[in-house]
Length: 103
Image (cartoon, rainbow, N blue to C red; front, top):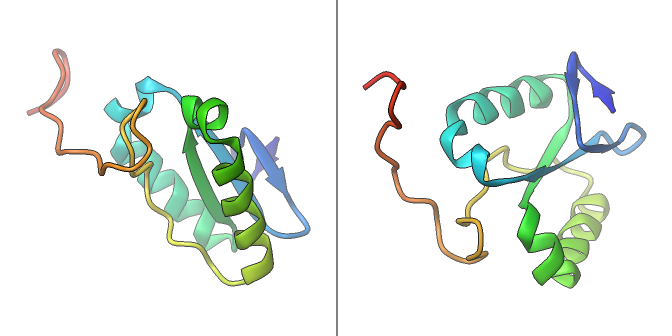
């Protein structure tokens, strides 16, 4: 869905809520995602990010987080995913640059 110059995975324009489902490639592009989320926030949108596998393994938790964001009505912190793919509770470590990326 087009939102503020970006394509969002899912969005509710009325609630100004954007949902992003991130695959493993997002671990390598955290800086881009963070900047994108900041731009969306500057346009008044809240961004919730979930790992793809979290939707399949913890759909109740995902739905609860979405419902809480809709109920809260205040901005959600615009952070990149806080869990590694396959581990929904542990924070992402600082990852070394991948081959071909700057150092």
